[in-house]
Amino acid sequence: MYATLRKPILKPPKEKYKYIIVIDTELCDGCQLCIEFCPENVLSVSHNTNTRMLHYTEASHLENCVGCQSCERICPTAAIFVHKEPVE
Ligand code: SF4
Ligand code: SF4
Image (tube, rainbow, N blue to C red; front, side):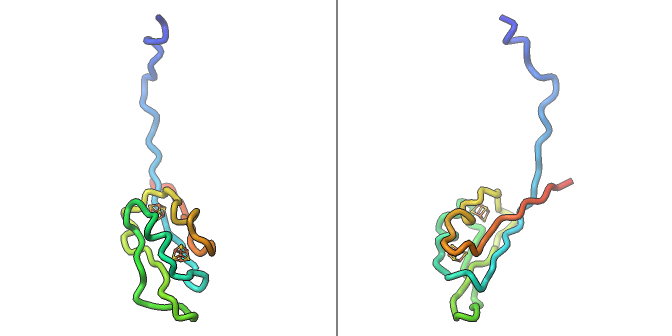
């Protein structure tokens, strides 16, 4: 019976973050796995190549990133990682 009365008075504050995608272009093999697995279509293939003449990934729509880290987890060469910063 008391369980229905035990509601929080204030909603918990929403945490807001911005995400920065860091890509080591020399490590990137251009396999596009991160692009395929990104749910928000943040990533795309760059027109530029690295020293191995491979087209690396770039974050072309960073504003859509939700920080899910799928790209980071799927990358076989650990070339991409997600940096999380709190927004004031
Ligand atoms: S963290 Fe998620 S949404 Fe952001 S680029 Fe990686 S896969 Fe896409
Ligand atoms: S998964 Fe890794 S190696 Fe493959 S394109 Fe993305 S960053 Fe490059």
